[in-house]
Length: 209
Image (cartoon, rainbow, N blue to C red; front, side, top):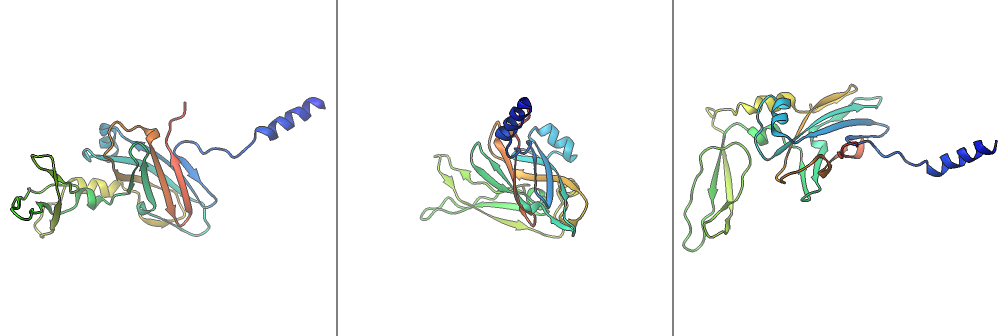
């Protein structure tokens, strides 16, 4: 009897809130499981096409636990890179490989400006250009959405694999795309925050030992 009492006291002493497993989070309304893909070859395999440098992809499965359909959207998710403090919203396929030409122009310096330089069409975001003397020049951008503009072949793969934006009672799964500039990032450097109709949850990704 004394032995049983000791065991019971020990259990009460060390029991506490269970820490969520890496890549998992949930509450009474929702359960989520996710995993980051950092290797470029693995991203290509998951997506079916090469997304290019400067991105990270997450596989995610969202399971509603509500009685009524729950709205699920990529807009509910934010990624944090703890290595450099970068905080990024999930990208829409069109932000990565949109239709149309993206023309980047350098702003003129006053007085005695540099003049205006125009790059050819590129796919992706806009970045500042550096001058020969090391000073960054501000850039602006315009998008040419002419009807005859060619569609980036990557776009259809991004649309086909993205986490659907929908109301559902059933599990929903897909991919999330985020910009990532930091070098040599590991799973443990990343966190995924959900903030949507089911509340706020955070997932860490340090691998189990």
